[in-house]
Image 1: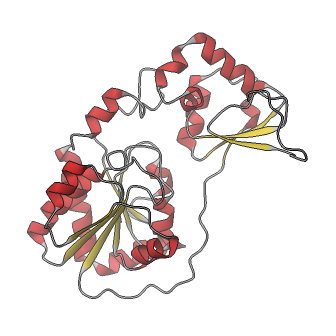
Image 2 (image 1 turned 180 degrees about the horizontal axis):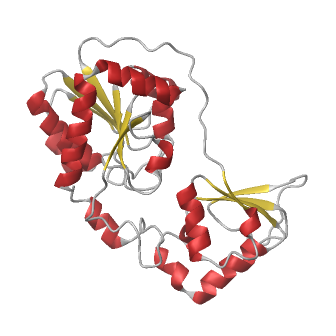
Length: 293
């Protein structure tokens, strides 16, 4: 399969996060450098793998290397010898289609929306689901008019702990796009303290005029202007976001173990920032309109 030719008439191959070894024009979309060698960031330490990666990216068949954020570009220029391909690297921020709707005033309840992913599984902890649940529990001690909607696959033990709580609604299956749009449109605050690469759901939330609350991990601050289109909380100092090659540590065991135990400091920060939005409807409207713009 490695050398099989593309379908007749193909002008360009677009590779999402992997290399192309066939002799044909191709473009690669890169989240971060080490991911091109697999989920374990330690693969980039292997000189043979790293040199192969540099050689393939420098090939004339590789026409462009596109990163969705500046943080991703930095992993290339700091982790690899880029002299043969630095001119190919560019940052192209993702975009979502504009939403043709008019934001309606709420019904007195404040709906918080968390979407681990709109269409794939396995992102509850990585997107900060545990922190959201603990912050919501603390917020409910202060406010009686809150609702939390979670669209994500949720671990069984977490679902069991939420069973019977009337103001938490879990959607743990993939739903049609129009139903997901309805959840966005009826929400008041989007909360996603993502520990990993910035999810496009942040942009979707902004396009639905929602103020976004997140943490300043990795590239989140490139998508959320703190105090302008959303609010950012300091990320956890307990989580090893990078390994010793300055590459993201997202695929490592120690990273998964760290995010499974929510940091009280992050939870406190989320409670503080979400409280600002709960108590200030005008701030919600201001941040939401700026994000949509």
